[in-house]
Image (cartoon, rainbow, N blue to C red; front, side):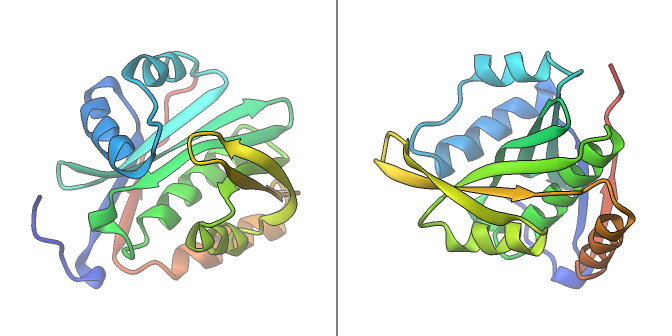
Length: 185
């Protein structure tokens, strides 16, 4: 792993996930999740471009995080978001969530939802900054650890107010972020 630059000098490229990223994605997946997704599951998801969007965050050539979005009607479901633990506290998750929110808006999604571990306070706080609110609990959602999931929703993401909120969040990020939009269908 390359030396991590000062946050002000950090340049993160958020690009559509491609097959060539999967070895790195699977490495992070195995490190952060007790029951990681398989290569075949990621390949299947990447094949559904009309109703899915997956991104990776790169610093130089290194993949440092990834995130995914499933589109169903007027709702978007954040399927996964993970950052290499060595890159935590560098706003990589914020950049990825911005990419997902912008992609959902571009695809005319009205609401976003996700599940998050009850114990993952850091992720919950990140989601709250994006306007997500807790609406319930899924008991034993994470079967491998018998942990409950908090269900969170962000509504009316198609409004000018939410766009302004995303712009304000973007301005809080140190360093530089470049975003590449996925090719449509």
